[in-house]
Amino acid sequence: MEITVLAENTTVSDRIGSEHGLSLHIRAGGKNILFDMGQTDLFEKNAQKLSIDLSDVDIAVLSHGHYDHGGGLACFLTNNKKAPIYINEHAFEPHYNGTLKYIGLDRSLSTCERIVFTSSKHSICQNITLYPAVCDITGRFTSAGLTRYHNGEYIPEDFCHEQYLEIIENNKKYLFSGCSHRGITNIVKAFTPDILIGGFHLSKHSLDDDLTAYAEYLDSFGTEYYTCHCTGEAQFEFLKRRMKKLHYIGSGERI
Image (cartoon, rainbow, N blue to C red):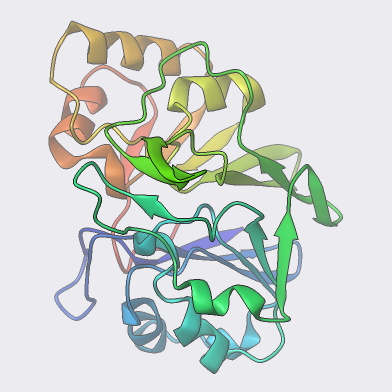
């Protein structure tokens, strides 16, 4: 498996751009997979610099319905004419932040015939599977002040529009999670992957004993983590000092 970071908040090279968002190119199981599309067309510009042809992408997956992961959807549709795009059925619903600023997707794209809407576990092909948002959120989960518009009112976000990509390769389970809004501890407990790639959504979390508890719990699974984006750089450094297998990935990096 080869994973290339096409867009992330940071960069590993002066020639590769960065932005608040996430986009990953994955080569696995004989397929070229695009996981998320960043906030703008930056992922496409970086792909060119990294010698990745987006027209060769076979499968595209959107992790959830926020602009910093799906803002590049129109760009992808222009650059790729064949790949189905797997999106949760709730992703195009109206999503807002705590000040009621719209942070959702371009809803005019929801009628694109190449979009495959998912609502449950979905097998894309052998060893490549999509899973809906974890149901057990009894652990660490918060709406983080985000809201959604439902039945004429703004209510706390429950992130039911989230989904996760699982790839089995060489007897290892890889799990891709865009922002882990339903709680990174809940997600790791549900899937117990060998390797997890994605954001932890801890960037606003205090550097305190509670974050130490996160580190201890995540480390107890033996999972290797490659995190990014919404984890927060200070939070990553805090966790890194307390975990055995934690890495940060930025734009331009290849794993």
